[in-house]
Length: 278
Image (cartoon, rainbow, N blue to C red; front, top):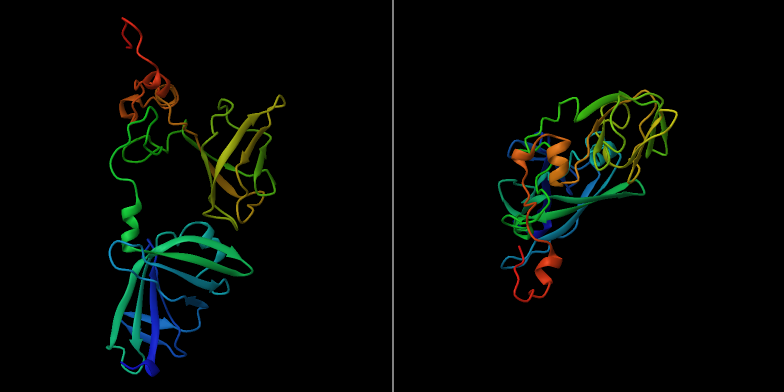
């Protein structure tokens, strides 16, 4: 291929199988069962690659003006870890192409009607911690394969219709099922309907007032504020402590921490003369 007929084409495949194709050429290109369109408002900066195990580094930039890539989907995490492939291709003969990058979408930021997505190379997984950490608190996530708590249990999650929303961060209910105060702290709220469907946040405070109002406060506001009448689901919080696992969830048999490990203070303390530390 020659530089005068060189174009770039990239495909993005979400976890749900949705695949989009983009190109910086001024006409559509097609290969591998994908149509790469020039009118989707997405560009990619030059790929920086290195030998050895260095992580490939680049960035994709796009305008939030296409039905295929919406701000709501980005904020709901539907594009998180989407598989991305980038080719250099001769637009006069698409069989003349080479794959120059393969990885996934990383952190996404938004502003001024655009989004920016970090592209992570295949070697990025090597940065993840490997092996098991020995710690008094549980390393599992509530409801995952290691924890095994049934998130559908009435004591673990509940669905409600929003009654009062303040700044997309504070949710007030005049009536609410009889859960203990702070039951949902460290837990999660997920929006099930409305303009903010799919968005979720972490609960900072869960308070019950003397007049029986229940107020939930998130650590940060949802990117798109849900509205009164939208359905949401609250999931109980877990602070990873052994006592919480045993008393709140009745799940101590699956506790994935080491609650009887000596504390750091104990390990650092000088030896007791003629005695034992046990």
